[in-house]
Image (tube, rainbow, N blue to C red; front, side, top):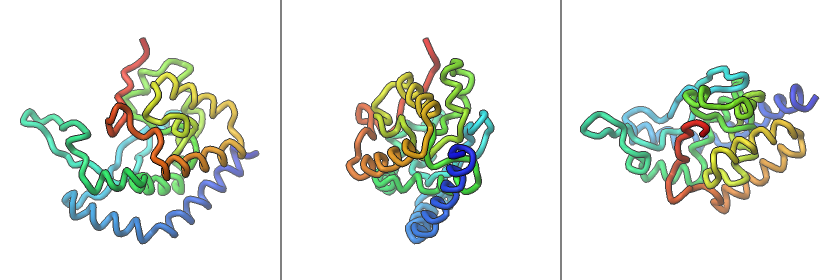
Length: 201
């Protein structure tokens, strides 16, 4: 009942309220990023959702498209803008994902949507993370986020699926708010993003 009816209802209701309440911040950030990123304020990328269905994830664009002389994208740390770092620090770059929730692609709480290229690298246990909609925040994010290994992260994802409940979702939301305020577990070895998942040994 909760998983199939109550959770989707609250996802859309809460996301709609968030988008309306934070609309001034969204509009201002969009305007500034449009100027800084040559008319491209949003980062849109295909990600796998529930049952591995591909959808387009929406976030604020916090990095430039700067490339090396050979045409390769520069490392994330070299492409991250000052304003982008500010948005990340306050997790404002994640707000557009509430549009994905309203569209039905995502949930507020669930395993984070990862790269499409990872699909062929998962083992059967890890593939279970796609049994539910991906989330803006999740059990792994409040238990270490980028500071834990990929294996541990997948364990948290599957544990969430096996124990999915209203109480667990509320707990994750409150822990997420706490971590955003105190900036816990965001960086790994001073890097801005998690290392790529290259498969299982």
